[in-house]
Image (cartoon, rainbow, N blue to C red):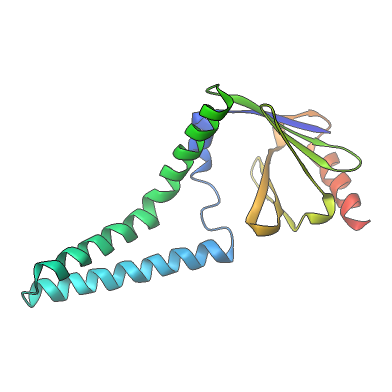
Length: 167
């Protein structure tokens, strides 16, 4: 079975909106930055109302702005940076990503870069609309699209993966 789709700037931009808070680690980071932002905002209000020194006010402003960046904008800029790095490395503005499900392993081909994954390493599979995420250790996932199978179908692939994981 084979799943194949084109990666370009628009697709990566769409990815930045998906799976923002999908695991415990990302939720913890979100909560931590929210608390840091609230503490910074409270410190800013206290320092302004009590005529605090400028260094204290400036450091509170930096803390609040950093928290806002981490909470809202960092996932958008990190995807843009990742796209630019890949496009520069591959030398093309868009490339084909292929997931091939063989008897022994899952082979990911990103343009000319090839990586293989073992079925027994799969931790979970999640589905959301047309998107399927196959989760591996360390919060790494392979993204498939149900309608992007060029050989086989998602239903057949899901059953195949299930059989491979049971062995």
